[in-house]
Image 1 (cartoon, helix red, strand yellow):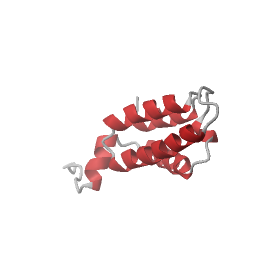
Image 2 (cartoon, rainbow, N blue to C red):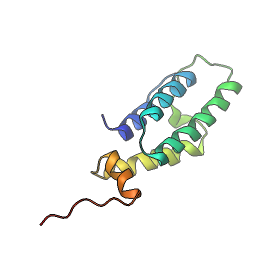
Image 3 (cartoon, rainbow, N blue to C red):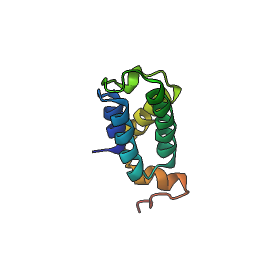
Length: 104
């Protein structure tokens, strides 16, 4: 499954905050896209704070309901990348200056 789709599905599913943190951390480990990894990390930091102050740690929540600016930014980034038909490796390669070979 596409990594950007995994992120969107993970953020919209209902899990405890600690489960969200674990799932996002697992996805971050396989991310090639540095912008994606930074966005995930920022959201994880927000979730860690929410987990610390939460009084109901075992209640499943959807991150989409969390008061986090990083959620919206990460969601928009993932949607934008999903609309691109390019795979993650190609997006990263192009950011580093690679161009696909031209057809003759």
